Image 1: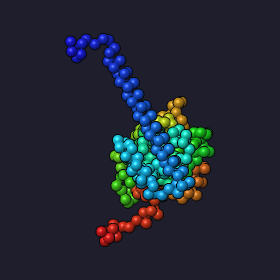
Image 2 (image 1 turned 180 degrees about the vertical axis):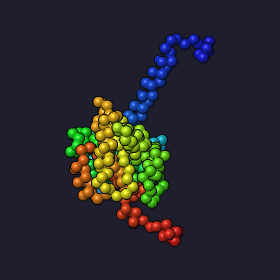
Image 3 (image 1 turned 60 degrees about the horizontal axis):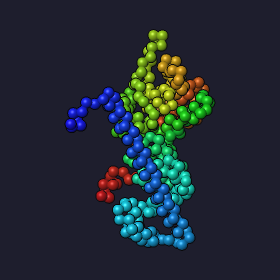
Image 4 (image 1 turned 135 degrees about the vertical axis):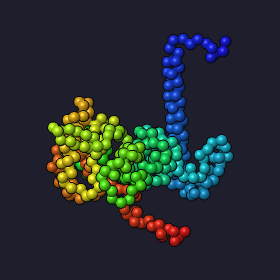
Length: 338
């Protein structure tokens, strides 16, 4: 009798589904183990090269010869090129402790991710931060490159806020992590100042990119969320829920320069969401005001007087900081050179 003609017992499909999940999980674990062993091997090779360079004065020519000889000894093994050996040396220099390379997030990343960290970043704290985020959120190599290009590490948690005085620790620290400055909306294709509703619509039309820029954990709740307060109508620009911190996040958009009155409006919306939507299991609602520009002294005074936890950030349409943009040639200059 053919297998497809057999009468299946009760619960067979559930058993098959369970086995499929177990096999898939085991394959993932085996890949992680193989990757960890490979990273550990690469670290050892790099560390050995470093030691010999320091003790015997090895030059780049010796590393090239070593790469050729290793490829002859292990013709089926990829990754033993001269450039890869230099990356291995760089990894051993960046993470000098062998146990740490396996125990830290970098030891759980694919080799291609590690080379990106070494190529694109010079500050060790930034390398460790991006490695940790990539492991925690399963970033692909392209996503990692995008996050580095947009300077996510430098911008994360950098918006001025009153979280420390309005929220207890560690909740204040968690809330600060989600407030970037500036937010980079280069994916909108805008260049000039636009009306607030236009910016709001553009962000919701490109929600996938907006959520990526806001950061991991944000879930979109609504735009122009309506509340009736004793017959008065109020509309929140954008409302999100942070699924990792279990809190609502109210975002108000102002395309112009920051004004003290903005914090009063945002504080009212934060209190409204706290009262109408927040549940017992939720963390306190926070607000983020995103404006075109700000005076930090004015922001500090305004936040100090506010009773609601909030941050004030700016936004930009370009991913490069102003000083780097100024250093680049304009289109006409490039055209004349070409």
